[in-house]
Length: 306
Ligand SMILES: [Zn+2]
Image 1 (cartoon, rainbow, N blue to C red):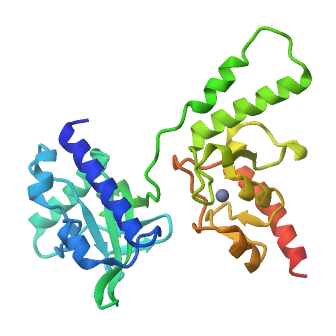
Image 2: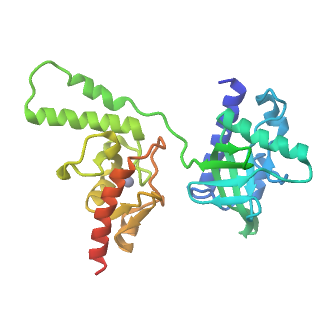
Image 3: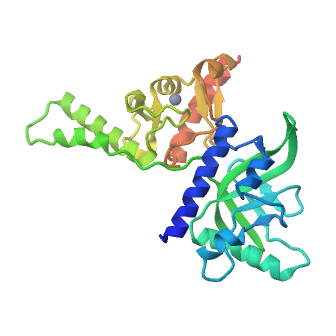
């Protein structure tokens, strides 16, 4: 990757982290002052698509630059916005040439793998300041010239490189001696754990715990239920949330990935800072495993409410 593009990628990631911090760790970032957004050249009101030619022109050879942000407001251009992403129409103003360039700039962002900011909704007043309701970091996943639309996916977490620390331990166990059944099981578990952490990253999938000593490699369909060791049946959870998940104190909606709680008390007591399943690498477990577990949770939830 060219150094200018790499620097712009880092700048955007750092700005996103800062916006999350300003919002108290929230995703999407909210209550971010308009002044912060302007000062950092994240968005300036400009027909919905902000390119910042001075900054991004050198990144592309077509002399058009790469979109930094898109404002979605009202539904004139917007097809849908949900928790995972949005679909919206190409800009359509009286200035056809400028519209074409804005579309190309968003295609360029996709080609260069640069995330863009999606600024959603109106501004509000908060503590005497003008703030944005909702800001998401997104990647352009699709564009359709015949339909004249973009699809973006919201990226909630900046992926962190998977840790390799856990695998060292496993290497040491690779001796030729015959192992007892118990040792073999231990070996399988440590392999499962290190592979799982490599796949999903070092973070509880439902909270911010990242300390390796506090993280478990959990099965979605439990071993006791003859759940497979296939990594897609796995999930990294902190010890509290692992026990809570196994005991159906909370569930994960397999379709929306939203967290649902057995009771209000559990929600408060167990500290769930995020609304949805979210891994450090962005990779999610298999939907069939989640559906199986969700059925169990639904049953427990129903019994609890009877
Ligand atoms: Zn947790």
